[in-house]
Image (cartoon, rainbow, N blue to C red; front, side):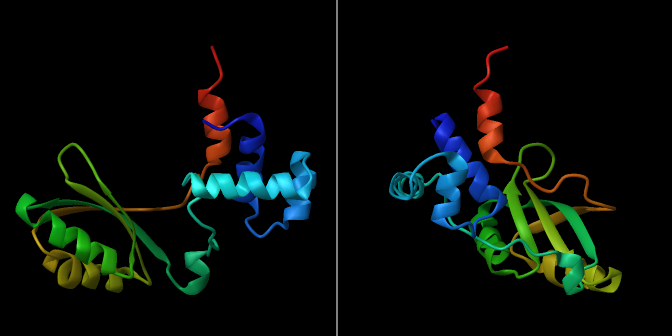
Length: 157
């Protein structure tokens, strides 16, 4: 599990993955080399899986965000998952319990594009039997700090 120093490092990188090692080391109270070694160890352990840029979909013209519950024929789950991986408008896909087999998060430019995505593309993915769509009206919370979440779970009541 992460110690307090690792949580500080991960938290700082979650806020700004472009931070220099010198600035990161200063922020967490280490010198540059030990800080780099800790980051490398976190990467090697798979805790840090990579670095990316967060983009505002709306500013790129993707004004519609929807969540789609999908029920499929189980024997086609591998083909469905492969098709989902390849589709550029599906942001996230989770296998779920309950009435649906998967929950998809998608973006489209407008309602006509959403309609086309549902009727022409999503409905034709392997094994799809049924979909239920919910529209996102606005985002209340978009992300968490996993470093803070780990710290929260390690607190005793």
